[in-house]
Length: 216
Length: 216
DNA sequence: TGGAAAACATTCCAATCGGCATGTAAGTTC
DNA sequence: GAACTTACATGCCGATTGGAATGTTTTCCA
Image 1 (cartoon, each protein chain N blue to C red):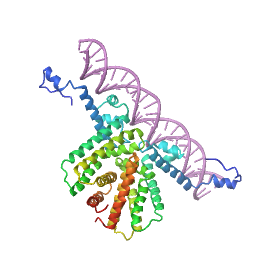
Image 2: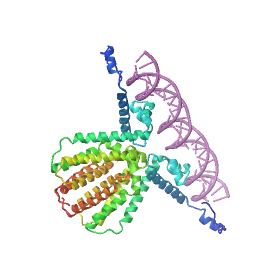
Image 3: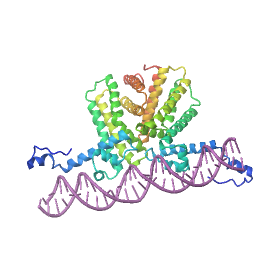
Image 4: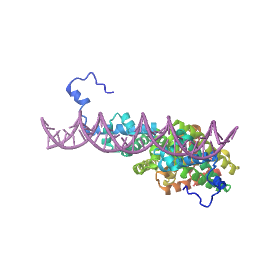
């Protein structure tokens, strides 16, 4: 782990690879390590069993360092929310690279939402959400961030499907998001995966009909 | 709370109202008190902050009594799941008293599911569900009970709408349940209530179209 | 009516929690 | 290179946790 490279001897090299990490660099490193560890704990242990000690252990960071960056546990959680949301947003953006147009977009859009809002990271979100119900401070931290994620994703679809009526798109989007979250919950406690896939397929069919105007 | 009735004086009356509670009665009383208190804690404090000590305090039961009935905390939680599910089921059954037939049933059925799966009690369910994700023992206790609730409610609708194709009913039912759970999650962290109502209205319109066969 | 059993109460415990206090090392600034 | 700030480390604290141990009351049954 801390093994020194035997080939490098001169002071200049020593300065380059080991020392002289900027304060900003050090700060960012340990902060990221803590936030990643927090998310890992949330997904793996759940909110109730996530302790700062465990987070520090996984991050390879001392308790003192943690407190230096996040005075309280709630503060750490709040920061984790944003970190987490950013990662999900990046995931969605990356996957949205080449989406088709027209009817195909409806189907693939639903898949995209599914992946983004029911993936591994969403388990951590769920933990924080549920915890936030009875924790006003956490709720205050989550609400704006989550709202931003929802809206930015919606805007992404609005860009991808400019020909689609706003009202229709909005409805389909939010219905899909909420349905996805319900299904994600079902998936987490080991519900029937086959039925979930069937439901998703059916929903695609229905959404397609709505898109074509067969409903409204 | 423990005030004695001043009018009653003779031994017979004393025997009746204070003493001579059957063992089964005593057992049932404190068990129910503990389970109700557990649910109250879950809805009010959340799973993470729910301690057996708090439960005992609210139930007005000593720690020893609690341990007599539920050896471990997990055991208490598992029992609370069933208790909770029974209460929800009773709630649904009571509300299903007089449902109309035909298209009207779709709309009111959705409302019924909403009330049952997104009501006050559902917050406690949500807590347990999320906790169960990282707690195998709890998950094992929840799964069958929840499955039974889902199926029995579905059967209720099958009885109420015998003319409806099974596949259509199943699809609409499960879609509604999962959508409801997603929306319930949104409601818990203070999402926009107006938008939720709009979505529910839109979903009713869509479900009605599916029911009429405009989609498949 | 008396003793077994079930229900309930009290006390204690080791473990763990989040957070504070204090000390050291690394980087920055002049 | 010395003063200063930031980053990190260690040890400790009171509070609270779930659970075990032990004692008391109530009901039951022979």
